[in-house]
Amino acid sequence: MFPSFGFPDIPRPFNTQYRCFSVSMLPGTERSDIEAGGKIIMPPSALDQLTRLNIVYPMLFKLSNRTTNRTTHCGVLEFVADEGKIYIPYWMMQNLGLEEGGLIQVESATLPVATFSKFQPLTTDFLNLTNPKAVLEMRLRHFACLSKGDIIAINYNKKIYELNVLETKPAPAVSIIECDMNVEFEAPPGYVEPSVSKAQPMEEEEPELDISSMLPEPTGFIPFSGTGNRLDGKKKRTSSENEIQSQLLAEYTRGIPDYDYQPGEIKFIRARRKKEEKENIVDDFEAFQGKGQTLRQSKKK
Image (cartoon, rainbow, N blue to C red):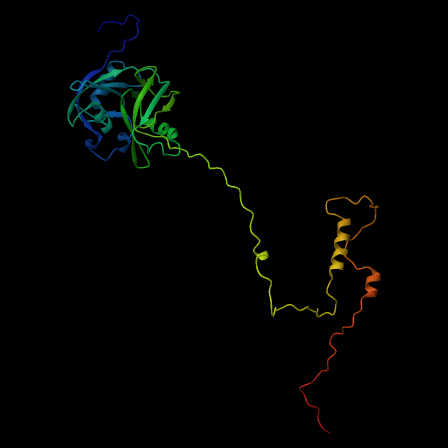
């Protein structure tokens, strides 16, 4: 080895070819966390090689299918794959046009930090969510980078939503690890804004008809047309008495202070008959004036 003469080690690029398989082919238990993100599984030998090359962190890679000339970018989750193989999400295989066991070129990449991205949902189901932007922000935590032209798939509420990455800034491929990124949405293909019908002017309500004035006057026998008597012997209040009561109450209207109030004096306002009116009332009704009867017969002597 040659001495470095105090100069820092220059990172060398990582460039290796692997057989590519979907995550469903990974031995062991099902890994749904890999399928819902944008990171891949690489073999342990790749980690050893990357360490020797003094690679820049975070580790980002460019995947290239030389047969179809399609590329994308991703991060790495674990180094537990079989030697010579890598496992990637199925949506990533579709973007690259790969089949199970196809050859893929993996190169180390250095990407700028994202400042802006624009997405287009492929269906209107994603826009029907309560807060689509919050859902996207939560699911993008499983991604390391974005590439313009990719169709990413996010899993939310046991449903897959596909979104087309229309634009990324400041470059066609960006890193989204620990970044402050502005997000915009484009309407789905064929989406039509719902038409809002203009409010119809309210018709003036017609006055209700008084049906009682249209009915004929009753003729013949009219039931319950007599007058009533009270059991306590008191006379029923007449209309003149009601007028007196309303006049008394009108003098002391609720909410208006009594300006003639004197300290130490309390007034109780009641509807009372005047003394002269009481003297003029002739009450000839006497209660309980009948004769009593007993069921027990008197003993004869």
